[in-house]
Image (cartoon, rainbow, N blue to C red):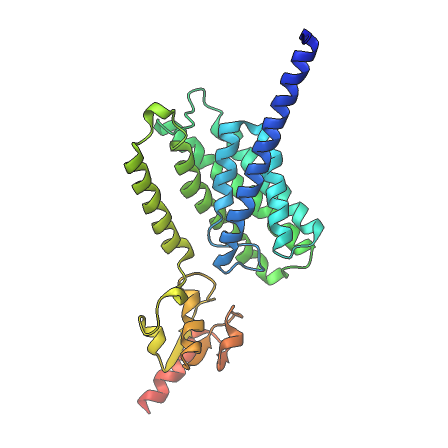
Amino acid sequence: MATPCTTATLLRMNGRVRDAGRFLGLASLYVIFARLGLSLGAIAGFATLVWPPTGIAIAALLLLGTRAWPGVFVGAVVANLLSGASVPVALGIGVGNTLEALVCAYIATRITDFSTTLENARSVMMLILGALAGATVSASVGVASLHAGGAIAGPQLREAWRAWWVGDILGALVVAPVILVWSKPNGRRPRRPEALAIAAAVVLVSGVTFFGDLSIVGGLSTPFHQADLLLAVGTTLQVQPVASMVPIAARAGAQIVIVNDQPTAMDALADVVVRESIGSVLTRICAGGEG
């Protein structure tokens, strides 16, 4: 017969095993969705337009408690190591991402009637405020880590910080609410057909909006497949689906001309790169046409 001491020890061990499983699952989800997020043409390989792991991390800490933070930290570090970051940079970014989720969870739960399923306006507002504050922390720590590690130079700091902040905000406010609302007790969840339909719609719309890649569209089905000349003016070509148009046109044999005062992600595919302001280039083009 188990003694009370032995029973208590077993219960503690079972609790730790469950927590470890949750942390591992959270870290795995973080890594998977981080890889998806980084497919959006990330700046320096790390700052991207939308960062789904932010929403996953925030929802996890609100539902499981702040004790789940190791799962966020491990997932963030592993995701950045897989993206080519050095160990110090990955650790720095991991700290920033973990602090982001902790800050958001702390601010959101400052009200006594906070609802994890967002059933009142105060809960929604506190989640938004937490996301804004958390994204500021993550962007600042992350960009500072990249700069300290030599991944980005001084002129890129502002653009990288802005992209990081916007990406985290979108990830928090698009992904976290979906997870939180779906965490309602079983009796209050949508019926299975409705749930499947909603899930399919969310996946489809999110995929097209955030991860849409025109290169998967069949040949001759977009203007970019048929273009003889593609002129890309005033865009960094880092965001889908716009980022796909240059590779599509290049594979179809089109001549590529890129006009931008800063380097773009597609310069290597261009036949001509004009590194000047848009206004001066277009003025010369118009003047030449009139002559």
